[in-house]
Every structure is written in structure tokens, then in C-alpha cells.
Image (cartoon, rainbow, N blue to C red; front, side):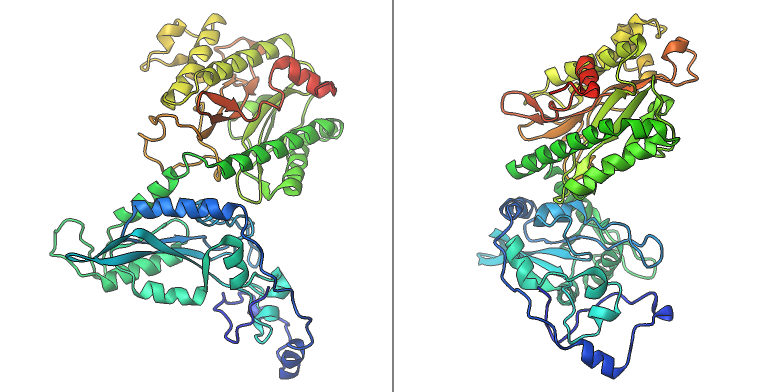
Length: 523
């Protein structure tokens, strides 16, 4: 699998060379390069995701005729000197290549436009673009980088796949990363790049744009301005990022399968937490044990967690993004767990369940829980193709307003509170009800408002429904027995041709089913 090219690829410098004790003698270098067994160079069949990724590339190609599209995976990010954070390629890169957790850092996908001769000159071809994946394969054994460079060395990180292996695996043409320089040399105003993925590469592209641009007259529309204080028109880059985000709004069959698998693994993680309750409640930082137990399952069944696990016990559940997770888990209280397994494909689940720690809801806890469940069910009931995404939130909020008004928490009626200029009930639920889900836990975030919040639902869309009620421990608008209670119920929903499917329906969600789950009686 290791590339055996006689010319070692360009590699990051070893930032720890000042303290290196790696042997440098000629004798050692000659000796370590010899007597290695042959490796199996059998090429794999294309992975299942390859055909779907190719179809996605065709769709983005059609949106950008005649433009060179550069989609970087992004670099590894340093955590503490010579250690890195767990690597994760940019989601747009993974979506267009099918390369997930096994992607090589610094890789770059380039879609090179095709042109054809037509009357009047060369014009973009109907066939679109040629796709090439540039990445750094393993340095050959005839180079010292395989043992001496901790940034990419095989002895340090394991072997990288060969160009031929990745080409077969992803059904995608490959080139060594060093060849990307030729692409950059021809960068001009028609080149588009995902700017946020790799800042160094973006700076190089911007510099080449300035060097290669034919500058229009000052003040002309769309001008690229040079000079020491030069600026660059990046509108085309923003459009590419937007289009790549919107490309993910409707999931294909393979993506939906990945989300189903991520949800199934997430259910296992919740089961593990429930089974570990004795140890969790006995520890002074039981929330940390909840987090660790779930994360262990995520690593066993997938790549890692899709986002920092929220293990919020007691009043911590009123902190919407509580990820400190350093408190005790006390019987008699509720624990809100918001967690999701991210698969090796990088698709993630996003599930929240609120559990009574000792197995049974109190009367007040159940009242709050069932109000949230009613809001979730009301939102799910309206999901079907043709409605607007924001209607889901409105359906949930109608229930939240009704219940808090009935309990006497609002200074006005539910109908009055629902007026956009009033919204008293939002004191107890300030967040939204839904967000798209996929490669990112908050997927498609760069999509236009008219296609997201105001968008029309289509079959294949996947999103969360997650209403909640949160009564802060010092909130004097509610009776003392409600203070410190936080409840959220979150499911992952697929829009079908005729309605919707709750993909996470197999994870207990009614109060009775949750109590049965905790007692071990759930199916």
C-alpha cells in the first residue's frame, strides 16, 4: 500500500527536530531501508459511497460550468505541540469524495472544467468537470521520512494508502499532492475554493488570483484589486460554499442508511449508560461517567461522537449546551443526555433523552416531560412534503405556550403569548425546534434562508425535532417545585414521499416507556 516513488513527497517539517534523537548515520539509513517484506498491493473494489459521491460531483459541476472548483479536506490541527486533534476532513470534501474518517490530511479535490469548441469559440462542455484527488501518499522506504518525520512518517502514524489504492477505493483519479502546484499556477478569476477548509491553501489561491488576473478598470463591477493593500472578490467562493451546503439538504439512499446506522449505535450508547447507573450515581462526577460510557460506545461502533456529549443532571439540564459534565447524578433528579454516534463515514445521529435517575418520574417531572412530548408529537404530526420548515417550530411552540399558560406561568394567554411581538413562553425554551442533520450535526448551515428556515420540505430531508422546557433554578416566575427541571426530547426525522418517519422511534420516548427502559422491562 505504501507509495514507492523514488521522489519523496513534500511533507511538513518536523517541529521537534531540536530534540530529536533519530539516528542520522549513513549506515543506519542504508540498513533501515532494506529487508522489508513485500506488501499486498491488491486493489480494492470501489466502496459503496463512491457512486453516490460521483453523482454529487455531477450535481455541483452542473451548478458551476466553466469554473475550477477546489475543495480541500483541510490540515490536521495542532492540539499540544506535536499532538493533533482527532482529524476530520471538511464535510464538503467528504460529501464529494466518499472519504470519511480514513481521509488523509491536506488532501484536495479539484474539479477541472472541460471546454469544447463551439461556434464563437471555446465554451464550457456539457460533460462538466474532470475530478482529481490530490493527496500525500506514504514516503517510500528509499526515503528517510518514513521513520524520521513524525508529521507523516509511517513508523509514527502507520502507512498511508497508495495513489492506486485510493483511486480504486473511491473510483476517482488521484495525483500526488506535490502536483497541485501545477493547478495553482493556472489559478485565475474563474477558480473557486472552499475558503474555510484550508486557510494556507486559500491564501495561495488568493495570491495567484492577484498575479494572474487581468485587472479591470478601477471601480468596474466585480473588480479584483491588487497592490499592497489589495483585496479579492470572493463572492464566487461564497456561492460555492452555499451550493455545497444546499447540495446536502436532500439525502440520498446511502446517506439515509448511514444515519439509520448512526442512530442504532446511539441507542446502544444510551443502553450502556442505563446499565452503568450504579457506578454513575456513586461517583461525585457522575456526569463524566455518563459521557465516558457513551463515548466508549461511539468509538467502538463508529469514529467518535458527532459533537460533545451533553450529560446534564439536575439543574444542569437548564444549561442548553452543558458540556462541562462535572456534576453528580443524583437519584430523584432528571438527567438530560444529548448525544450522537458519528460513524466512520462521518454521518452522525443527534438524540436527546431525559431520564429519571432513579427510574421513576415524580408527578411534576412527568407533567413537564409529557408537555414536551406533546410538543414533539405535534411537530412531527405536520411533517410532510410541501410544508415550510419553520412550520415545525410553530407547531411545537403552540403546545409550549398552551401548557405554560395553563400552569399559570405566563402573564397573558397562550394565544397572546404566541404573537411574534410577545413570546413570553419562549422564556422556557429559547432555542429552535429543528435543524438539518447529516455529515454535520447542524448540517447545511450555509444554505440560504429561503431554502432552510423558509424552505419547502422534500422527501429525503433529515432533521431533528427537539422541543424542551427549562425552568432555571432561580426563576421566580415558576413555583419552587418546577425550578431546576430541564427536559428535552429529540428525535431524528426523515421526510418521506407521503409524510415522515421517526428514525429514532426505537429509542424509548414516552414517560411510561422510559420508566420501563430504566427498569429493564423495555423490549
